[in-house]
Length: 192
Image 1: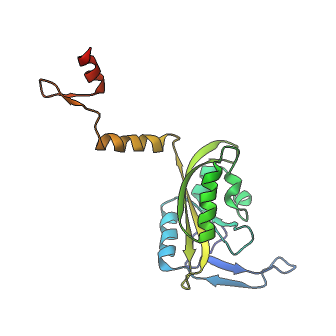
Image 2: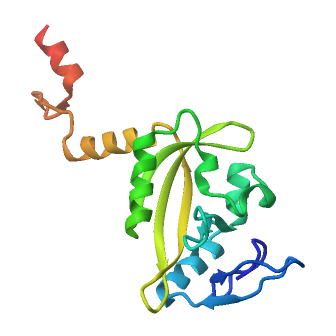
Image 3: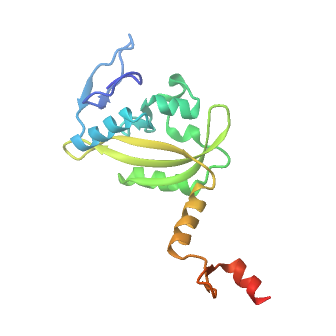
């Protein structure tokens, strides 16, 4: 596993113990991921996606890897991100219920997706469609979490739902004498 720069290798998770006085690690145990989880990370990396990996075995589940896309999206630097919990992206407008969904998923080792207001390094808010999933080793132990960030337009969800509803239930209320659909506006005009 790299240091936040370069390629993601076949072993992503590491168990680290306390460092020696010279800053070196006394002992590091690498844990191979399940092939399906490793394939996900390879796909995210090659697709230039915005994602982070965190390590729940370390205090406060800190970020141990962030993709270049994550740095570009958020404006944060490697030094500002690695070793910190993802909550630094939250701010005054972040919905606490969405945060609770994430917290519950991490506590239970389940996947979750939420749309929440996050903040870039310069304080600019952005809507983040966040997907969080547990990555497991061959013993089914959680070794990392992946968080995939997708910036969305504020009304994207509402307009997508409206488009689906309109496709399933067109607004037309009938057919006029020429066989043309009459929508609600035309129906009101015909009644006047």
